[in-house]
Length: 280
Image (tube, rainbow, N blue to C red; front, side, top):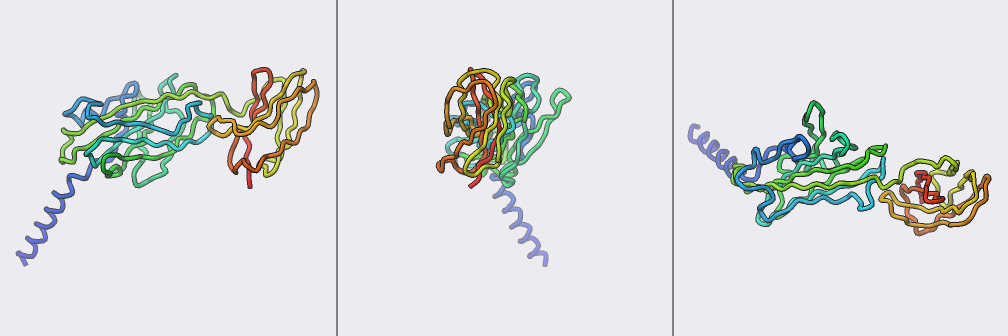
């Protein structure tokens, strides 16, 4: 019996030693080097930051900026040739007061999780890796959603840090990468011009929208449809209207797929916008 116990213990010890190289702690919040924060270098020491020939990058926010109240699917990629274990931490802060901007949402619970850190008495939410969530050869991709704040929060900066681990069982040989991305509101939100009353029916719409508006003064009015990334996908018309009440049916082309959009009325360099939904 003693011999059998010894063999079982020895096998367990071998398993622990063999797997220790592919394990890492869960991600930690408050290590992105954003204003007031510390860095991952406190633990993952041994190499200067951004020095290992690898990289960290983020995609998902359109170059035109974010639309208040919209949701964006973000991806953070950490790369370094020869590495097989990666981690990350990310946060979104308002430039105005360095508090959280919008909400992070977990979409891949096997790889990512939400944690928070207190910085200058204020709690900041971070999206970070799960235990072994970044076990992948040469690079790892971490995906999650960001719900932009419903009101215009001005410029938002995303701070993110990445770890490329050497799998030695120690953090002293790891490489750390930092980057940031700033995004401005693209000016499209559900707002209105003082001189134009604007309503849409039906909403959701399938084949058309009926648009009612009051035009206070003569001028050219443009109607167009933008997607949630701020790109114009269809222009309905551009024509002159005199002052008064107007009722227009605007047909939806078959090329417009189901989803959420912004119906935009432009006049004199200003715009009023309504969120609309197209169904099929």
